[in-house]
Image (cartoon, rainbow, N blue to C red; front, side):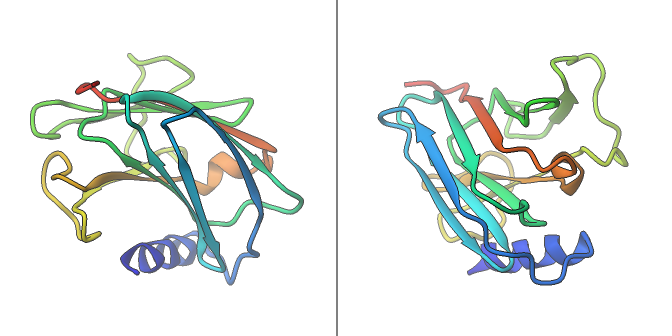
Length: 170
C-alpha cells in the first residue's frame, strides 16, 4: 500500500484530482513479466526480469495517461533504464557502487545530464521487499522505483517502450 500512497503524493504534486483509471496492454518477453496495477491514484508497471536485460512495450487504451506513472524494476542493479514515448527517450543509470550516483539524460545524449529542475527528470528510489525505502542498491526482493514525470505524457502517447540492463546479469 506504500506504492498507492506514493502514487497519490505524485498525483497531488502534479496538481491531479482523481485521474481516470486507464487500461493498458503489455507485450513482454518470455521471462520478463510485467504486472499492471491501475487505480484512481495512477498506474504501476511492475517488471520482473530473469535475465537482467530486456524490453517491454506498453500500449495505452482510450483516454489519457494517469497523472502518476511508476515503473518498478525488480533488479539488483540498474546499469541503464530507458523509457521512450515515440518522440522523447529518458534514461537513468544507477552506479554499481552501492547506488550512490544516479545519472539521468534524454534522447541518448548521456553527456548532457538532466538538471535537477528539468520537468522531464524522473524520481528514482530503491525499496526493500516490504516497499519501504532502502539505502543503496535494492536488497533481496527489493526494487528500483522510477516515477515518470507528467511532462513526459503531455502529448498523450499511445505507447511506451521500456528497455533495461541490470549490471548483474545472469
